[in-house]
Length: 323
Image (tube, rainbow, N blue to C red; front, top):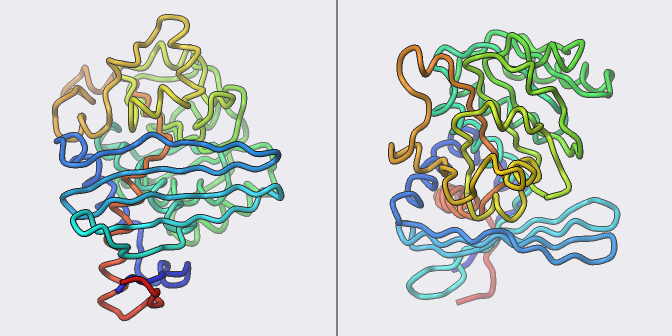
């Protein structure tokens, strides 16, 4: 029997640790040829947009998609549909706002796990929105943070964000006085904004830093400059196909001949050891690594599969009139 899981149902079972495990599993299965992801398709209407992300996971016996609609008032509705791969029947529909936040943060967490230095302790964070919350939480799960510096233009909201997240995660989370302070002295730099212009000068970067740009999933958005891309080695993406379609950070670098879409390593390839990530020894300590995250349907399918399993075990959800 197909079931419908509300936001309240999903929140009862989904934690960041679950999202981290499922998103990493999705990256691994795709890199090993055991799962398929289809780059996002957008339907643009006056003042509103419909977005579809599709994926198939034979290892889970599931195929499905997430559809989210950004309305003219900027609010959104988001649903994940899961189908039985063999039989074709609908297994579940899940409200996916909370799940989307968790899996987006988890993707950065997986990247930090494999691309940041193991002794990384200081995080510079650009952004204070709801997705910035899960970015910070995910990174805090994979690295032992001692200091988090947050920068954004609205000082009042930054202060509120720092107070809330510091108390929630029991970390020292404080406002950065400038963009430069957020970058310099940080082992990791995470960016989750809707910026259309680079947020810092790539010349400020220091050896060994890991940068995760997670907000630039449209060609008219930019969070990092060309200097950052030039200095990064390697530049890693969640999906080459998606990056080519919508990475506003990397399009100027491609046009300038700095990168080649076909040679960018996917994160899953780094996780399984097929492609180079951070090296061992002194060479690795000096590497600047950039990770570009855009979002993949595979992340929704793998996270949704575990949510569905846990919800069924607890008797959550509403039965749907589908055989």
